[in-house]
Every structure is written in structure tokens, then in C-alpha cells.
Image (tube, rainbow, N blue to C red):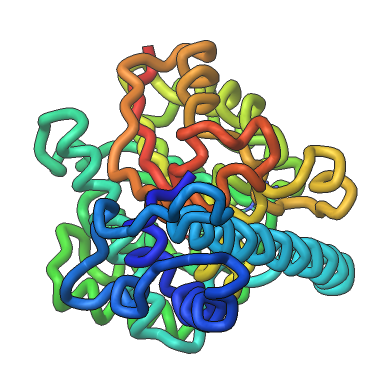
Length: 372
Ligand SMILES: C[S@@+](CC[C@H](N)C(=O)[O-])C[C@H]1O[C@@H](n2cnc3c(N)ncnc32)[C@H](O)[C@@H]1O
């Protein structure tokens, strides 16, 4: 429930409406709240300054505003639930017509943005790895990397290989990276040349050709495996991987437990897993306004209107449990991003019962773990 101070200071969308109502209904409510108080200006409202009504006058000013805010919140929540339903239906239709869409919110023809994104993703993984292991980033030199769900291009593997990774394998359910324009990869190689590389650019260029299927090399530097069934165990040799990285992909997997089990089979003892997981609503317009929208629906409705690869709503605690169950230890959750308090308080009661817990506030996290 809201505190009056919160109401006025926090509920910006409603403040204008409250003011209007407060003007329109002072007699009906019997409220003695002053205009100055409701504006929430420099002299921020004090609970003590809300005058209590004499007995028998019905609502107090506090109760009235509280009531208005709660009605407004209810309408807001209903509106966003309806919008969420519409987005689910549209998403399903779009998926049916065109399959899995773009991996990112921007186009692969925006080279600079794609490259900035890829560089940032790798830098953040390596930063998380460094902090998690208390070892330098040089620990990846000469090692094998597996990426799950690499998305729209080969910028990430090129950058990782330039840092001395011996071989990189990506597994995906959709061949998205094959659609990337070759000019994007040329631009990425140019950027890598400027940043600095421990591997000649010509070797990276060769790896790229191998990665896209033209190589005769038995152990290519870059391997891109697309398997609709996402069978990781079939894509990599057992106990062959030193580092498993993933970004904004786990939340799309059909069966998170099966993925964690298989990753455990292909990872060596001591291998590290670093995975960024995005728990928010993915529909772009909604995400900005109502990041927890997908948690408004029952399992039945969500499945009914769902389609493959929509966010699976697996919570953070489940990742910890599954990793520990399948042979990973020292599980740590880092770099968390939380929904704002005021937003969460406003939506909490309208989420489906299993999602009303505090954990649902988590919008993004990076999970780090070590193979036993
Ligand atoms: C949002 S994209 C993220 C891609 C990339 N890591 C990035 O940060 O841009 C999700 C990735 O997961 C893959 N993916 C989606 N649904 C999947 C599924 N059901 N099984 C396996 N991979 C899936 C997509 O092909 C894509 O590579």
C-alpha cells in the first residue's frame, strides 16, 4: 500500500488526475486537503500536515487521495494487462508468419551499433569473469569457449579470438548470424585492428570463413552449429569446454534444465559459466513502460498465447538450483538490475500469484558458476 507522501511524489502519471479530482470532488469527499499540498512542490507534503476530518465527515483527505490512487493503479494495471495480451497475440501471429525475429532491437546494417554492442558484451563477460575468479582476463588465452545463443553476427567470436581464445564454438537454434552482411564483419575486423589483437587479422578472417562452413579444418578456430533441437551435447565433445558464455539467450530456451545438464557434460571440470539473463518483458514498447508485463498472466494463458522462444519466465533462484543440481558449484548472481520500488509496488498485486514475490523485481542478472 502507498504512503501519502509516495502518492504525491511518486505517482507522476496520476498527479494531474488527482489534482483534477481533488478540485472536482472536495465537497463530495469532505476533504480538507489544500491545493498546495497536492502539488507536491518545494514544501513536500508531510503526513502530519494532512488535516484529519472531524468525526462523521466520511473520508479524510488522506483516505480520499489513497482511494483515488488505488483506483488509478487498478485501471493502469488493467490497461497494461490488456496491452500485454494484445502483444502476446501479435507476437504469436508474427512468429507464426515469419519465425524467430531479430535478435536485437537494431538492424545489422547499423554497423557501429552492432560492433559497440558485441564489444560491450564481451567486455562485460570478461569483467564479470575477472571479478568472479579473482584472476586476470588472460585466463581465456589458449582456452576453448562455448557460446549459447550468439544471435545476429560473428562479432563476439572475432573479438574473443582476437584476445587469444584458442577455439570458439557457438550453438544456436536459429541461423541468425548467417544473415549478417560481410561488410559488418569487415568493419568488426577493422575495429579489432584498432583495439589491438594477439592474433593476426588474416587468421581471424580465415576463422570467419571456417565458421560459416567452408573450412576443411578438423578443429577450426570458430565453429557455428545451428541445431533446431538445440542439442548441445551433440554439438561439442564431452569435457572439452573451458568457458561457457551467453547473453540474453537463456530466457529463450525451451528447456533450461536440459541446457544446463548438457552444458555440464561438455564443460571440463573447473570450467566457468558466465551468463547474462534478461527476465523482462521482451516486446519493445511494453518493456519500457511495464517491464514485468509477462508476469501478469497465468501459466495457462501464457502457454496458450505463447510461441517458441518467448521468454520462459524461469526465475533467478531456479538457475541456482538447476546449476547446483547438475554439477556446478560456487554459483554467484552478479550485476543485478531491479525494477524500481514504486513501479513494483504498483504492479505487484496484479501479477500472477507465483510472481508476487520480491524475486520478481529482478530484471537482469549475470550468473557465474564453476563446473565441479
Ligand atoms: C535475444 S537473442 C540474443 C543474442 C545475442 N546473444 C545477443 O546478445 O544479441 C537470443 C538468442 O537465443 C537464441 N534462441 C532463441 N530461442 C531459442 C531456443 N528456443 N533454443 C535455443 N536458442 C534459442 C536465438 O537464436 C538468439 O541467438
